[in-house]
Structures are given as C-alpha cells and as structure tokens.
Length: 406
Image (spheres, rainbow, N blue to C red):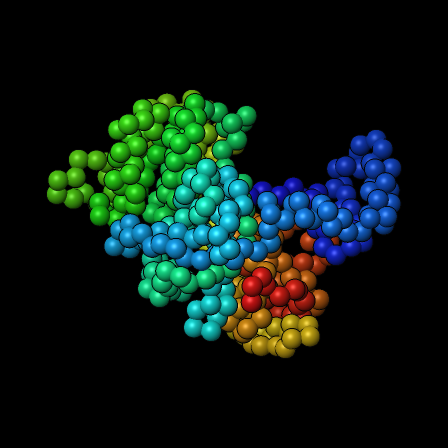
C-alpha cells in the first residue's frame, strides 16, 4: 500500500489542500490550489446522493456472520464469512484484505487478513488464519469461534494486486505460510475467469503436512498449464521429492528459470523480505519489479532502525487521551496496542504503518515512528502519527476518533 507524500489528509471539512514543495516548480499551481480551496468552501461535504452510491462499494464497516470453518492443516483454518443480512459483499481485487474486529479477553482489537477466496464470488469472503506462537487473535479465531458468530470489519483494502497494464501476464509469487492466501485468490481468479495470465508460485512451508491448499493447488496445476506450483520445505522429510530451503537465488533460478523482467510478489514473514529482494536482484530483477505485501509487524525497539541510542524501551511514560483518560505504558510498546489494552481503540486496518487509518493527533510530546511508517506530508505537518508503528518517547497527549464497531 503506497501513498504519495502530496496526498491530502482530508480529515474534517473545510479541507486545506497540501502542496508538495516540488509542485511549486510547476506553472499555475497557486491558481489550482486557490480553486480547490474555493470549491471546498462551497461544498465542504460530499452530497448525500454520492455517499449513497459509493458506500456499498467502499463501506467503512461490514456486519459479517461466520458460516463455515474449513480445516486446512493442523495449524490453519479458513473462516468463511457472509453478509449478516444475506446480501452480496462489496467487490474486491485479488490480493486485497479486510481488517476484522475481534474482542479477546476484554481487549478490543483487529487484524488484517488477506481474502483467499476468488473475487468472482461475492456471497462470501474466505479468511485463512494460521496459528502464530503467542498470537492473541490467531489463537482466539482458531480455538474459540463457532459457526454463527458475528463480526464487524472494514471494507476491502490494499494495493497488493495485479495490474495487467504494468505487471504483465507472466508473474512469480513467493509465499510463506499463510502468505499463500492472496496468491490463492489470484490463482482462483485466473482459473475461474480463464485469464490469459501465467503464474508461478514458490510456496515455502515448515513441513509437508503444513502446506495450505495443497490438494487444490495440485489439482489446479494438473488441469491448468498456466499455473505452476513449487513447494519448498524448511527441512527434508522421508519421501519428500520436492525442493528444500534455503530459498536463494540458485534455487529460484533452478525452479523458475530466467526472470526476464517478470513481476514478483512477496508475501510472508517480513524479516525475509530484504534477503529475498537481494536474491532476486542478484538474478537481474530490478527492485521496481518486486511487490511486497505490507501487513506485517514492524521491528520493535530497541532493534528498530533509528531508535534513539541509550533510551530504555521499558521505561514508562504517560499517555493522555483527550477527553477520555490517561494511562502509563512502556516506550517500546506500539501506541495502538496500548490504547486498545486500555479500552480506547482508535480506527485501525493494516497495522503496519501503511494505510493511515490508525493515525492520531499528537497534541503534545514526542513519538518515534518505525521505518515502516508511511506518514503523509499532511500528517507530518499537522502532527499526526500512525499509532500502529508509533512509540512514545515522552509523556504525550493524543486525540482521535474511536474505532469502528466498538
């Protein structure tokens, strides 16, 4: 998910267009800004008719019911969610995600899950959830939920999708664990829509019994020559005839041949992205041909690049939430998680610093942003922080609107 630094945080009307300093080099920019401001003053809000047309396609919230639980592997389930009113769900593009709201042991939170079902089927969304050691939400969804349970979520989001104009018709997808979910949505769309696209999937798993969608992938590969799947295990097993890690340049070249400018997608543990990107570059693939799913956890302090030297991440500071109360928290804890744990959750979606839904106004004090934060120019100028990757360095006061569905 990528945002231009010049994109305006529209916030509450009246809107003030932010101007990238580079734009000042263009003739007529002052006149454009003036007209935008005049238009905002004349029409500070979208007409009700426009909102009524846009809302079904881009809803801020969905009411969903769990209709089926599919056991994929000993560590993974697929949760099939349908609209609680029985209608169709909003359209999405293969590779997008929804942010599912969950209450776990009194903590109101959410997590982003890629949709693994085909975008051709809008009677349901499939979310494929794998157990993470110590995972608060994954353990809850795998152990405690039942058919008939209801959830709220945001609408489909994300730009980790295929663009036929720029990405070509021959793509490579490197997936690890549940990172196969967006790849599965893309593959299902190719098969169902008979798209003229070739896709090669290199899928890393710990063990052979931990390969998600294995039977379906085997059947698709057998019946559709445009889909090629290579499974790569962490360690060799008796009887295993497939590839074994490390997934390096040599193995990638052996399995898929020359990359020749193909678009490559990465989805899996984020700490492997720099290594895999370097391996791909050694095969002659430029960085602009690598796309990375951004729904991952930032490296925490003090390991986070740029963390102030000598500053103790365990030392506590005070967070005052304007009009709602205050609490103490360690510097090295993500502000978003601390707000949720203290019963004051803001809006949130990707939880990786990209989308900006969780931004809060820092009224006083100082915060540190992890390098994953994609803070827009307008946010920096107005003192907003992406709370999912923001850490309070001092006592701070913040202001924000409450989260969706809580």
